Amino acid sequence: MAKKPPFTIIRGGKLLDAAKRQAVPADILIKGDTIASIGKPGMAAPAGATVVDAKHRLMHPGLINAHTHGPGNLSKGLHDRWTLELLLTGSQWVGIGRNLEDKYLSAKIGAAEMVLKGCTAAYDLAAEFPLPTVEGLSAMAKAYEDVGMRCVVAPMVADLSFFEAIPGLMDRLPPRLKKDVEGFRLSPWKATARQMKKALQGWRFKDVHLAVAPTIPHHCTDAFLVACRDLSREYDVGVHTHVAESKVQVIAGYQRYGTTLAAHMDELGLVTERFTVAHGVWLDDDDMKRLGDRGASVAHNPGSNMRLGSGLADVRGMLNRKVNVGIGTDGASCADNQNVYEAMRLASMASKVQSPDWQQWLGTDEAYRAATEGSARALGMQKEIGRIAPGYKADIVFLDLHHVNWIPMNDPVNQIVHTEDGSGVHSVMIGGRMVVEDRKLLTVDLPKLAAQAAASQARRAPLTGEAKKLYEKLETVVGSFCPGLAKAPLHIHRYGASHHHH
Image (cartoon, rainbow, N blue to C red; front, top):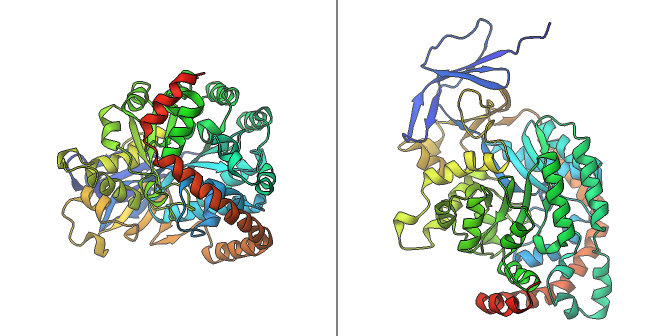
């Protein structure tokens, strides 16, 4: 006979009612990993149910990070002033010498930070060089599983290097550097597609799903983009890609396709309700309408957009055109933290400096919804997570109402977005199981994690030193060529390109 799933009853807490902007006293009954019912304080529970005391706690659904990069966690704080294009140039330096253990470790550091800061699920675009491997993807998935967090892991893939993808950049490199950059070449796309198919076919993780991430459209040949589209259809998984993150990308798109990147991907049939655009800072109105009409999502990463100087995304324009918007932190080499409370706060703030029309600003209710239901939909998990409601997974954050962030409590939605910074997180439950309790992460030994990270740094140091020197040489070329491109008015590229539209 199958063992009956255990019951848990949460008593004495206050449940966030975002629509009413109130915290309402309520008890929550959980069966196994799923919320069974929500009732008045003192509601009946089956005999033998485990009792969780939530007195002086505000309960809200686990936050969901719509866009991060697990491999970035070992490189947090490595660099300060870099644009997206310099970050891409530096990817060899920051990612060099990674073995399986490093891939596991880097993902684990990020997952540990996220759950400690109230985030219970993430969309992780994970890169391996020169192509994704089943072992690497499984190591990263295992890290999330060991921490106890949900995740969608998407191998970030391309068949053109950054230097091949930006028209005219290779020609700017002196011969010596050109030769060095040859080493950055990626595997032919058929080999990469084979590896992804292998991973999708044999995937065995319960709470970690796979998706496909053609990293940046013009870093992929059309044949490869179509292969990614077909894998997504065949295995019913998401497609996640960096679209119009920087102005340089938009210009490269016009030069390559004579259209916007989003229009080109739509022509190839990639833009569906499974499709997530990361950033979308430079999407135009037609792009937004196209995404909205197809039921697609944008992962909005306001911190990263500022940190890399990419710009301020027009979230109001997206919402007006029915685009689903989630909120992400982006990776730790351009965030440099994994704090979704901060990402919500920045989403609110960035919107408020964009126009004097205060009625158009993003409200805290919209930022909160984006980081929960919006992100859940981007992950393809909107029926399971993002809300505290019967039938949803019991992913619940308990904020300490005696923490100074909550003294006094006036409007819980405003305060989750504008006041809370992660330091008020008392406990975190994922699938009915406590992962963080009384500010302690129960699934990870942090001092041991610190020692492992230090050992990894030391082991890779000889390689990173060399790679950094090469980065510094390339920085001078890329650092003058790309801003030069970005300073030109967009309409010149838009109309200049239309003559040689392929």
